[in-house]
Image (spheres, rainbow, N blue to C red):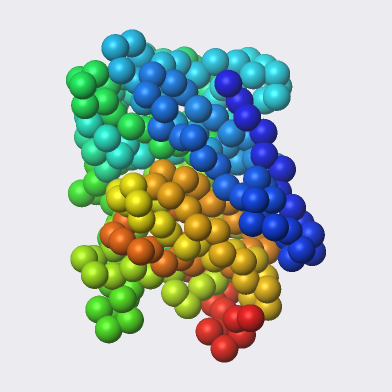
Length: 277
Ligand SMILES: O=C[C@H](O)[C@@H](O)CC(=O)C(=O)O
Ligand SMILES: [Zn+2]
């Protein structure tokens, strides 16, 4: 099934109630066992989804909303496994993903199949897809092969490591840049002070958060912050105009992914804390 999500614009979000904000900017219900979940956003036509195969593999199907044909006929896909080990088949190729390994799937008329090694400890694939203008090779990136950036400090509760598996220099992609950030024990803030990047939109998927804990994800224009209290395995969608950062009431990690104009990770417009209102 392919759900649709339509984002509010940068004026309308200012007067929206929390429930309306969630409806516009939050994807929930991901990681359902035995199902392939997909939500098509009108933000850069990004798709956020998950596949948690148990006994039988799950396969991408064709959607009229995407113009028909193979799911990847005109799209690229990034996948990160947050569960047990598994295998993803792209046409004739098979890629084995352990926890926190990533796969780039290039454009093409291939079948894509998601499988778990052990149905009792299934792979839990989080995926993001964007339209692609050309075909780059599919490539597996093990966690140890990801570019690694350690930043933040204990004193400001934002000590964390950014892992960049799907980025220029490691893979070639049309627009997708994707990876994950893990916070050190006792650190709770991501991306602080926050930023926008008008040239790209971004999706955050929070995971490894305990069931009762919440991440307060901040969005909006710097002069009108809105907070979205998110639960484990929910995703927040940031249009290019929206700043983003978050703070957890417990430990967590998150997968970030970007699409749009350029792929320069450091091309960010930082928002000074004093400008937040
Ligand atoms: O544009 C880059 C993204 O927002 C994230 O990669 C930032 C992040 O993971 C962090 O600082 O914690
Ligand atoms: Zn960002």
